[in-house]
Every structure is written in structure tokens, then in C-alpha cells.
Amino acid sequence: MVNNLEQKIVLSQLPVAEGACFGSHIEDHELTCLPNTRVDLLQDWVKNPEGARVFWLNGMAGTGKSTISRTVAQRLDDDKMLGASFFFKTGEAERSTLSRFFSTIAADMVIKVPEVSTAVKEALHEDADFRKRVPGQQPKNLVIEPLMRSQGHRPDHPIVLIVDALDERKRDQEIYLLINLFTDFSPMKMSQLKIFITSRPEIPNRRAFGKATAGSYHPVILHELPEP
Image (cartoon, rainbow, N blue to C red; front, side, top):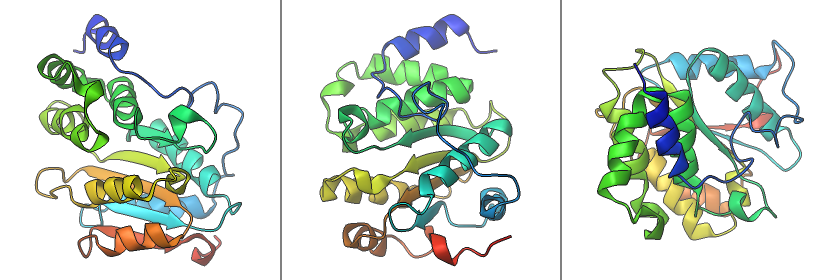
């Protein structure tokens, strides 16, 4: 049984990028797809334990990637499989940087996967200065370890993280950092973790994925997805 007071205490210690998560009041007015659209094709990837950990949906600006991300998030949330989400957005300081990315993901996980609360609380206690650390040092304690520790205490189904509009994080080195982190998670340790990423097909994104381990990600070009 998750302690609501503990959950509130943990959330109060995590700096969050306002409006970055699916379901935030800022995103409430945004559109989702109609039923029976191409989003249905992603269900096989989510439920396939042998499939690639990362699904990279890429397409040009204005092709509806974020609409698909919100629809995927809605369906996963309905099925209790949405672990956390972050929608990058150029022009909004907290949503166009990594400074609050991992703490926002951790906070969203505490809400959507409450079984991780204790592990996140312990991580914050052990590393009170986590805010001062560079982004690459944060995910292990705030995201990966809590998910690993909670595996025996939560339902036995995939947990999906959604990262939308990765290209709106303009610093190439930070894009490389995130893609490397996501594609390098050990399958043996986190077999239930899936990550859905959308971005434009710019060269920095292609190069970063090109360095990833073979089979660790599944690239799909939006306009090549067949219509239902």
C-alpha cells in the first residue's frame, strides 16, 4: 500500500517543468487522434517483450507527431502502462532543457507508478544535492533504480516513458546524452521498460541513433506508417 503522505513529501522535493507531462492543465487543450488510427500499430511494440526497447517515430515538422504522442499517452494511461512523459517545447525554458527533465520524469512516475515512491524517496535522501549534478548523473538514482526496485511490487506489464519533440532540445550534446541513455539500458535488468520518442529526422538525431546498439531501437518514419 502506497503512503499518500510519503508520495506528497517526495513530490515536494522534485523540481518539475510545468506543463511538460501528459495530463497537465497546460496540455489539456491539445488534440489527440481519432480511434482506429495509425496509433493502433504501436500496441504490438508495447506488448512485445522481444521488441526493441526504444521506438523512434520521426517526421518533418507539422506532421502530427505530438498528436500521436498524446494519443499514445492517453491509451497507455488508460491501460495503467504510462510510466511518465515529457513534452519538449522550444521557447519555454523549463521544457527546452534537461535541467528538470529527469526530476520531472521521476515526479510523474511517483504519480503514475506509485510503487516507486519509496525508492525515489531513498534516492533523494542519499543524494540531497542531486539538483547540482549534471543531467547525465541523475537518471540512475531518480529513474532506473526506482523502477528496478519496484518490479516485484507492481503489476507485471510494460511501463512506457514518452519523450516528445526531442529535437526541440537544441543542444546536440544533450540529444546524444538522452539517446545514449535510453538505448543503453540493460535488457536483463529492465525488460519491462519501453521508451517512445518522437523527433524530426535531423542529422544530430540520426547520428545519435546510428551509434546505438543494434536492435536497441526501432525507427519509423511517420509518413511511411500505413493508414488503417
